Image (cartoon, rainbow, N blue to C red; front, top):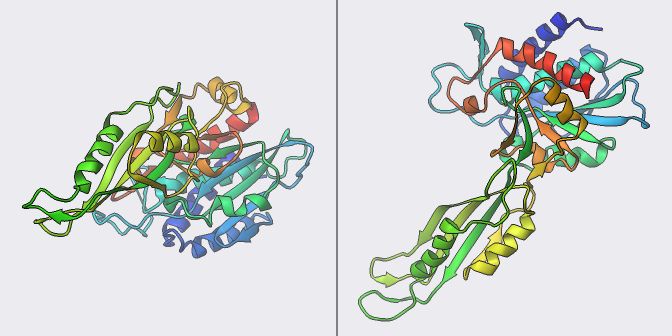
Length: 353
């Protein structure tokens, strides 16, 4: 069994390997192989589907409850503002620099070290499954949800994202709708036609001002934002069509289907949802993972950002080393002490749960 110091060292070495290997979403095959090789060196057998790699604890017992440890190894493309080589892991002033160091390399390697700590415990009260998954940054279909049917039955999950080791007990879902307001073309100089832009403006005003009656205790109000609009092709033609897109951040007070129905009831345009996959989530405050986090004096909060947690159909928390404010920034970094403390805190959280 590795000592805590050895776990820290192994995790940081793995983090540097991952940084040095490009793994943009849908192109994570090389980092998936690095993860397979890492587990092999530690005599842990793995399974792989596409670019997803997972493993179960050595003494898995189907009679015990099972906790999933999950984080992703894909990254966004490098921010054009980088002044460093994004694929050169460098250490300065107690920081590890490099693309994906903070989101979500630090949380990922910390969860892997935690899994190794518990891997060969015979009489531990939980089974653990470690899943390093793909396509999180693009909410792709070949990530966690693609392997879910192949995993053991899960009772709970810890999703590794940079939260400064605070615990997100709830998370907003995402509903993106494409809207089309229809009118009738006509000459702008004459009183003819039906201006689709004016029709769209009525619905846009509703999206701007409407407040959903139910308010989430941890996530507050649902937020709707019109983010794209397109209409017209000539200055002298009344447009017959206006298309616009609305970004809706849904709380656990409503399902996506309920929100979609309310939108359709109050608007006149045609509404087409892009997806009903990115669902809001919440976990009870009397769940063992939340009680454990409270014992460790962790801050509990509702997260406005989405993650793979939206695709995990069991009670879950989002928690990990690093800061969300550093995600996708130029010259991304994570503090070494954040990774080592993250490992120690994950271990404590599971032991107390």
